Image 1 (cartoon, rainbow, N blue to C red):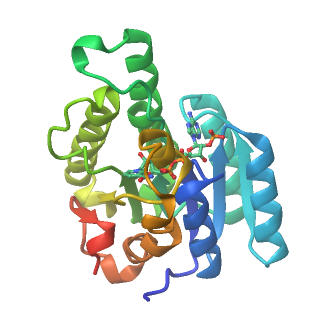
Image 2: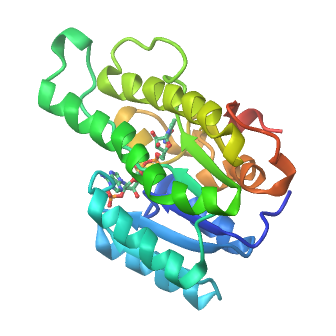
Length: 238
Ligand SMILES: NC(=O)c1ccc[n+]([C@@H]2O[C@H](COP(=O)([O-])OP(=O)(O)OC[C@H]3O[C@@H](n4cnc5c(N)ncnc54)[C@H](OP(=O)(O)O)[C@@H]3O)[C@@H](O)[C@H]2O)c1
C-alpha cells in the first residue's frame, strides 16, 4: 500500500464510519490530523485514542456549515502544524429519502448545506495555505448516486452530483496553483449511514470502511501528484 508522506490531513465527519477509518489510516501513515464532527464525545475519544498511539491531532466539535468554527480550527492547526496539505470532505447527511416531488424544502436545504456548502467552507479555509506552498490535495467523498440518476434519493443524490461538479471546477481553477481536487465514490460500506438507508441489509455482507482507505492515501501522496479532476471508485482501486 502506498504510504502518505508526513503531511497534515484534515478530515471532516471523522467521528465514525469512513471518516474514522480514514483518521486511523492516515495516523498509521504518520500524518498529523485535523478532525471535526458535530458530536464531541466520539470525536474526543478518537482523538485521545490516536494521540495515545503517537499521533498529533487537532480537533473541534463543529458543524461544517459553520464557517467561523471551521476557519478557527484551520487557523489553530496551521499555527501548530503548518498548512493543511490534504483535505478530505467526508461529512455528510442522508436526509429525507423520496422523490423530488415529495422533497421537504427544509430538509433539502439542510442536506445541500452539509454535503455541498460544508465542503466549500472547508475548501475556502485551507486553500490559501495550500496555494502558498504550491500544492495540496482535496478529496471530496461522493457516492454511487453522484454521477448517475438514482430516483428516490432526493437531495442526497443532487448534493453528491453537485459536489462532483464542484470538484471538476476546482481542479481546473486551481491547475496553476498546484492544488489538486478529486472525487471518490467509496461504494457501500458497513456504517451508520448505510444502515439507515438499508435497514434490512445484513451489515456483515458489506466491507468495513478501513478496507477502502488505500485510494485516499494514494490521492494524498506524491505518487498521485499529476492526478486532478478525476473520479475514483474505491472498491475498484487500484
Ligand atoms: N456508507 C456508505 O455505504 C456510503 C456509500 C456511498 C457514499 N458514502 C459517503 O461516505 C461518507 C462517509 O459516510 P459514512 O457512511 O461513514 O457516514 P456516517 O457513518 O453517517 O458518518 C458521517 C460522519 O459525518 C459527521 N457529520 C455529519 N454531519 C456533519 C456536519 N454537519 N458537520 C460535521 N460533521 C458532520 C458525523 O458526525 P456527527 O453526526 O457527530 O456530526 C460522522 O462523523 C459520506 O460522504 C457519505 O455520503 C457512504
